[in-house]
Image (cartoon, rainbow, N blue to C red; front, side, top):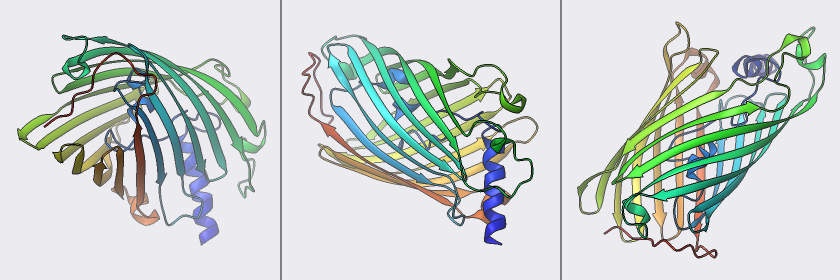
Length: 319
C-alpha cells in the first residue's frame, strides 16, 4: 500500500509539473506573509533598508514518504542608494524528481514623495535570472515511463521581470516568471518546457488603532495553459516598537478550466522580536486527494541584518 502511494505521488508530480521538464523554477509559493516576495517578483529585492535573510521550508502531503518538500534560503538588500540586489537558493524534492535553483535579482526603486523616507512610497522594477537544474532519478514501476526514456539531468536558465508600487500602506505588483532561455521548443517525447507564469498582487495595511492593524492581500497567477489560481490572505498584527505578533489565514482556490475548487486553507502565526522574525502555517487540504494524503506545513525564520552598504534613505519605526 505504501509503495502504491509513492507511485501515485510520482504520477501526480508529473501531472502537476505538466509532465517531463515542464517544471516551474519556483514550484511553490506559500503565502505573502510566510514566503519571501522576491521569489515571485524581483522588484521586491532591496525594498527596505535592512539586509533581509530568510530560511523557508515546506512539506506537503505529510503521509507520503516521498511527498513534495521545498527549502529556500534568500537574502536581499538595498546596496547603493536606490539599487537593490538579492539572491536565493531553492531545493525541491517531489517523488523521483529533484529541482535545484539559484536566482540572482536586481531592482531599482524610485521614491514617491519625500526621497529620504522610503515608507512614504516607492515605485520599483526589477529583473532576475534563475538557473535551474532538474534531475529524475530513483526506480520506476511504471512501464514506458517517459521520464526515463530521455535525459535524466537537464539545466534550464530562466529570465524574470517584475514591477511594484507601495504608497501609504497600499501595495500592488505584477511579474512575469519563467521565460525559458533554453529548451524552449518541444523536446523529449514531444514534452513542453515550463510555461510562462504571470502574477498579480494587491494589498492594503489598515491601521485600526495604535499598535493594531489588519492587512488583506490578494494574489492571482495564470499561464497560457489556462492554469489559474487565486490566493486570499488576511493578517491581524499587534505591534509595539520593534516587536510584533500576528495571526492570519491563507485560502487558495484553483480556477483552471472547468474544474474550479478550493485547494488549501492555511491558518498562520508569526512574530517579530527585534530583528528576528518567524512564521508558521498549517496547510489543510480541501481536495479529495489531499484529504487522503495528509495535510502539510510551512515554517520560515528570518533576520534583518543592519545594512552595511549604508544607503542614503532613512528607516522610520512605526509607533
